[in-house]
Image 1: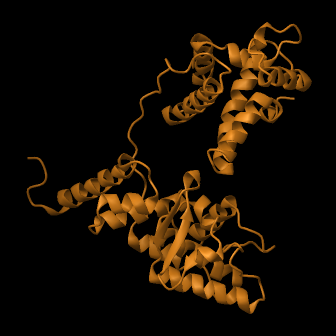
Image 2: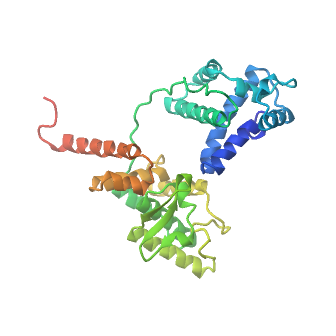
Image 3: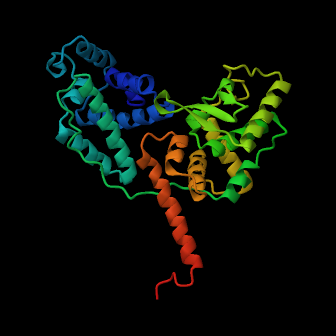
Length: 337
């Protein structure tokens, strides 16, 4: 009964719909929030010895929507909804202590806390609660992890892996070239339509987080790969109108982010590269290689679609680290005496 419980508790499904519809989160990100909240809901049912009663949960949420704020004071079956709304800081700390017993990494705990903080902030904004009980809960300190990047030689090895003489190979070559040429996210890549490609200006319109649009240059190698792929589609009489998706599966429908990740894994194995490399590694490599070659931080920020410059600045730490390693290896007086 607790499997996918988050899909049966309206107060949670409403929040998840808000993330997808109003905040324009990707389906994958929304699913991650759902999984984190599932743990919270299951813990509540076990802690309070509750059985999921879908009609009661629906009724509790409807009473709130109709303006009856004192959900917990209603006479009727005890619900998960009332425990969510009446939760105080200590109650939530008890849940986090329960999670800590699973020995999650600081990064995972930070994500789960962020999910709860966002959920209760949404409840507060919608006046379901008077104050956010997550306000007093601190996020555990994490070691600053530098983004993983691969060198140009490894990138070239990966990009040359697909056989572009076949339809799927031409598509995959265009995908890999586009990811590295633009530094876009996988979710942005699969959202590209043919109308987003400007062949004359060698640029592409990208819809990023929050549906914000930006224009990024498309390098000549990537442009050639996309043009070749488009030609192969035409030769196979596959629609490539302005509103059609650029990257499609064998059923001629839009490719999913999961499929892209699987394709990258396939080619990593094929050429013998580290299997932990992901499409996001190409994004990190894109930024790192630009900065290594003198690009200014503000331009890289705009290309990546980062809202804050501080998010982009982590790449400067990576390039500084690489410079330090090069110095230590090359300078005759670099080593300590």
